Amino acid sequence: MTSSFEQAIVAFARAIPTTQVDDAARLIEHASGASVARPLVLALVPNARYQEQACLLLDAWATHAAVTGEAVAVGVRSAALAARQEHDAQRLELVWTGPTVTGIPIRHTYAVLVQVIDAAQRRLTLVSFAAYTTAVVTNALRSAASRGVDVRLVLDGGTHAQRAFAALGNTVRLLTWPPTLLPDQHPDHASLHAKCAVADQRIAFVTSANLTSYALDRNMELGVLITGGETPKRLAEHLEGLITARVLDTWVP
Image 1 (cartoon, rainbow, N blue to C red):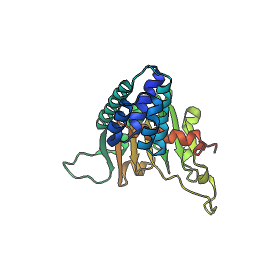
Image 2: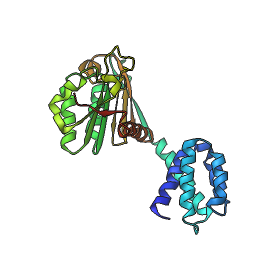
Image 3: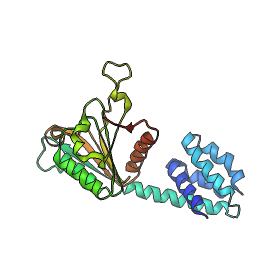
Image 4: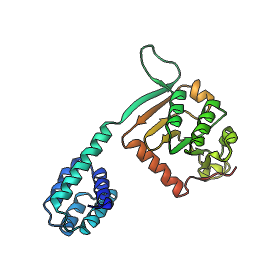
């Protein structure tokens, strides 16, 4: 099998619902080739995303006629098992700012945000509504950029959030959602109210906290730190898709 064939198997195994993996593998296993399996597999997975991955798999199989259905089925089952194990390895931690209860271990927002920034090796995306000067965060972002991390800050255009990171200059990429740049009274005005940080598709921090000293250290804020598994990857890919499509666009204040 070529790498593209293997990738198609993995993508299909990740896309298909867990409850249908065995059914799909069984259909493939007993088919004499891709053309025979195609209508059966496509009928099994009517969802458009699943069908797209199924077609990629079947097209790849069609170019490798010597590969048996049994071999493809083994690949699908193995990839699905690996995906389930990866998902099971995902770790969730509660993150909190505000009053705490003795004996209940909960991570602190400030520390977790800096941890995510420090963990990034290739790409870091931060999304926030408001941002005021927070020296610890700014220093962590500067350090990330200096080690070659592609740092993107996605901020609400109506809050002047970019001013908090002016000292970083062009070492980071500044983006916004264009409707936030419209006047408040404009019928198409909207706010970018999401708050999250994603590092290298491996770690995702989803939080109620803005990038402000009050939110990170004084307010009552709640978030979840997700390490491993599919969720950080999916969030990173979603944000990347919004940037590629220019739904989130370069902001030149």
